Amino acid sequence: MLNRLGIGRESDVVTGQHDLDRAAGAALRELRRERGLSQEELAAEADMDQSLLSKVERFGPDPVGWNRFCRIAGVLGKEVELRLRHSTPQGMTEFDLQDERLKEVENLSPAAMSWKRFCKAIGSKGIEAEVLLRPLRTGK
Image (cartoon, rainbow, N blue to C red; front, side, top):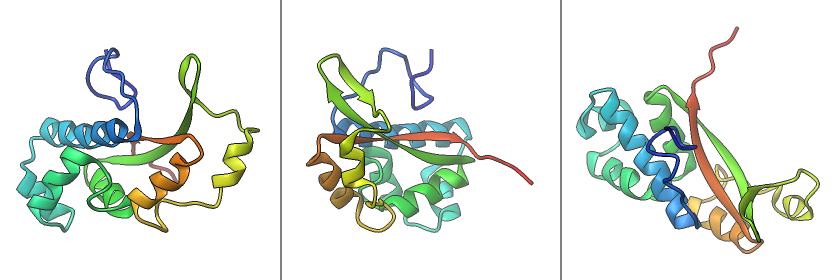
């Protein structure tokens, strides 16, 4: 059974921004392996150093930032979706679009600042960013 990142088991539950970031990196690594690419091959296609790609696969978007993370996903045929979630007594949940905390962070963009700074800003409001990989949309 696939988890929300599209890999692994449904029971592979992650909590905390650190774990969410690592899960995103692991999802990229799994996609690379499924496509039979070495780190060197993917790094060359994504125009980056292999050692930096290795860090992305271990730590998620933080080593390269949002835009380059999205570029790597694109080379693998995926687009990146960012889902904001927050803690409730029942666990993590997605936001109700009317939640006031969303208004406080609506002008923040991971593309406009470092990933670490973005996560710290939303984290101060009790929000975590879950990175999801989706098939690239092809349209007219």
